[in-house]
Image (tube, rainbow, N blue to C red; front, side):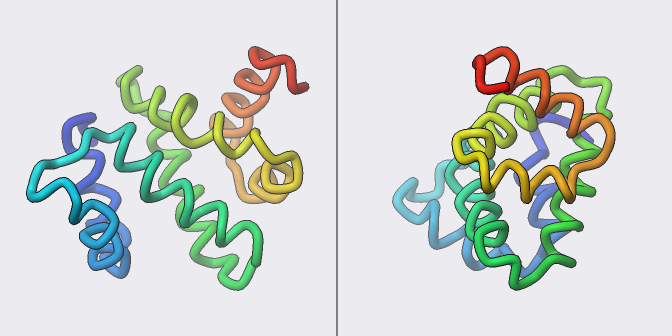
Length: 122
């Protein structure tokens, strides 16, 4: 997995999201958003909605499995997408964060606690 391919990697793993991603970024008129924008503006709202309803726990679990793979990457830029873009926003709502943590794996959980401590929320 490479930083410059993170957007493509998400859609490869979750092809059912391809049409929704195209709609979200239609305003960019063919330009490709960077991973922080893609994950922040596309994945986060979707993930927060799923965590709010818990209608599809299998999907949530697969997303967190993918995020854990990213968190375990040797590439700090990939880790930063998980930490700064995804986990930091999940921590904005304690209920969402608590639900999310039931799906997180080891490194993702560690990063979540670290970012929450950094922001003084834990």
